Amino acid sequence: MPRIPVLAAVLALGLSASAPSAADPDPANWPSVLAAARGETVYFNAWGGSENINDYIAWAGGEVERRYGVALEHVRLSETADAVNRVLSEKQAGRIEGGAVDLIWINGENFAAMKRAGLLLPEAWADTLPNYALADTEGKPTLLTDFTTPVCGRESPWGTAQLTFYYDSAELSAPPEDIAALGRWIAENPGRFTYAAPPNFIGTTFLKQLAYGLFDDPSVLSKSADPEKFGAITAPLWAFLDKVHPDLWRSGRVFAADTTQLKTLFGDREIDIAMTFNPGEASSAIHDGLVPDTVRSFVMDYGTIGNAHFLAIPFNASAKAGAMVVANFLLSPEAQVKKADEAVWGDPTVLAYEKLAPEDQALFDALDNGPATLGPDALGKALSEPDPSWTEMLEAEWQRRYVGG
Image (cartoon, rainbow, N blue to C red; front, side):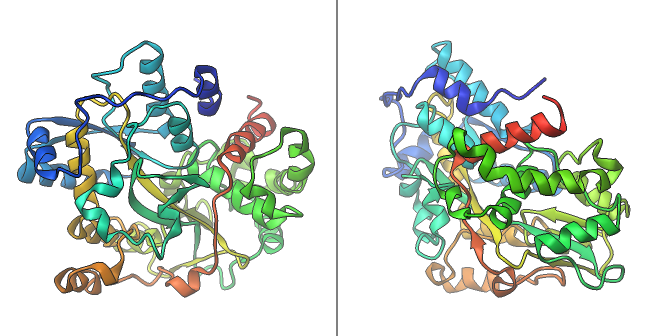
């Protein structure tokens, strides 16, 4: 089934906003939120394509149930847009209460779409959570602006990311760290490189990474995409992809599904370079015995796409208080340090170290990054996510060219 374009569906619905319900919990009165949350079941719609992430969510579910009496059900998604479209359908059907989605792992164009169509809680809530005071909103501006869309307290920060490539240093002594070198390497090593098919997030991110390095004026990415100029602006991107396409894995006839399959292909030695949005993923894979201990990471020399990911609550969620309790727990030092542990997930924290209590700082100090993890300096310049309009247009054009959709 082809994916329904989220932004197109939003425009069809209109830019209406949802009126706040008298029953909406107020996180400024946290004891009342905790009381209302007890006994609720939170249906957490989150990507389910990675077992270590699924295991982490299961651990968090056990903790919030034990501590707060909140049950957490992980609804495993292949695409976040599936949950967005479900909320959209409920609104179109007039279902303003008792929605099926309580909490969504989200960012980018999906957040922009939900905000535009009034599919989120109408009032700011995330910046009033008790643990939000620990978030690094000063050092990480991506916690305040999601793909150029102001967050305005409508989603709670959960993690940060930067596009990272990895390779086996025992097989490849000098990885291609610029686009020209990557193109030459693919041509000289046919069948040894691929990427995930957009609209999977890592595949779309790869397109945006290439756009920054190939567009004559990459500053256009910070503005809304102009349909009339889109073809001319993006021509260098398609020229590059057209050139490398025949030399991709399986001659470009099929693509990977997601980062998990890329890691599997790499571990099975079907490809020699893989990519991830998690700078700690390669070290985590070494720890789990999925790849050799000679694997190392690299980034493009002109910078690497970086962003933050968040948790959002739909306007008609059935368990709004429970969703806030879950979001607050996932923002706690305990949950954030466990998530940052490469033996668990390796996802970088959103917390500010200097805001933490000494005992919580000690937890982060005890983390041991693996040999494939790049430090902040080695990660280089973080390139801002483009305006959300670029995502839809790049995905649609990629589908037209390489899938025929």
